[in-house]
Length: 184
Image 1 (tube, rainbow, N blue to C red):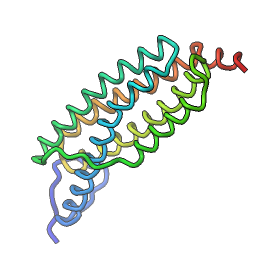
Image 2 (image 1 turned 45 degrees about the horizontal axis):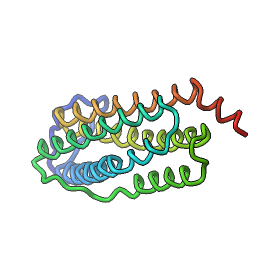
Image 3 (image 1 turned 135 degrees about the horizontal axis):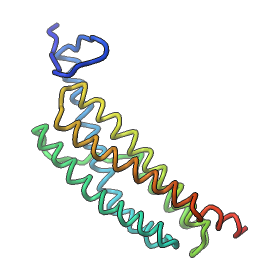
């Protein structure tokens, strides 16, 4: 078996065969298509969360993230281009499930309440954590495969997803959780 030089400096020396790199590359591309579907699905789902939220700070945070998410879609299109692949979306069951859960939280809470806002934050953070895991794993794979330009794009989006998660935590801790506790 021939080894493939990935061009990256690994901490541990490992031999990657052409077959392994091919299988890993296929998994990587499949995962990009999955994430592309997920981001596009969020572009359609986030407006529902914005309209269901009450707190201005939460509405603003989700609105800002919606605009970032549109940028994430564009970046993934760049990734497809860098990979020399046609832009394709593969249904992401995980994101579909997370957004259905969010819709259930909205339906199960009273409109205009801090409790609903807490539920929206919780659901939104589940989405962010899924995205953080996805972008983090794909960044590592891109690095392993020697796809430096792709890794840089994924790393930029990963940083934005982490920041979005942090903002949601701050919003919950600043006031909304306490208001919800008083609603009982």
